Length: 261
Ligand code: MN
Image (cartoon, rainbow, N blue to C red; front, side, top):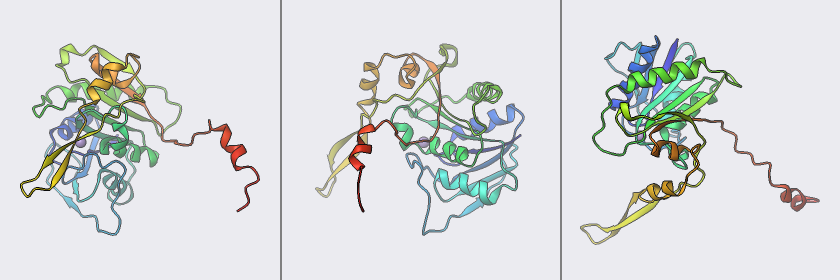
């Protein structure tokens, strides 16, 4: 099984190594094509009007391929699919991101978007995130946990071949994890904020923070919501599809009736 691995935390992120080891545990041939620098919160951004450089790096963990790309997570997947891999991969894994990708953050996430890009190329894809924002993270054992999950997701019955999952791991020791829950994206979490500060030259600047997110989480109680599952120390598995058309707007049909351009 050929497994393409990418992330948005960059080629040197420990979460990437954890995911590589997970892929090897399930017997996969690992192709790493990841951003050379951190590209968190780059969403589906792609590089245009600039070249994208790809540097082949020495193999470190028994990979087949290890390439650092000068662009975004979606650039990595597109380049891998179109140019770098001779045969399409059987699976795309993205992560393990340092920080959760829950609620609205799913749309900002480079980690989830890279997996979605794999899905767009018709390949089953999984995004992995560790929902911890502490600077010190223990990545030990997450490869074993991720490998177990990947096996189960591969073996599950799917309605389409290009399935896509967003997996978040709770920020607690492995022996405290409550279990796994099938979840849906929290529709409420936004919680963006900016702290205003003054630069040494007197200009004001704004530091983006998400300090309201925790409070928003407390307001939700439905156990099937991703943020609630994480709060209750469950692994959150959200099946995803990328279809944004909203056909529940009956009023607009009448509103557009007899419109003559
Ligand atoms: Mn990240």
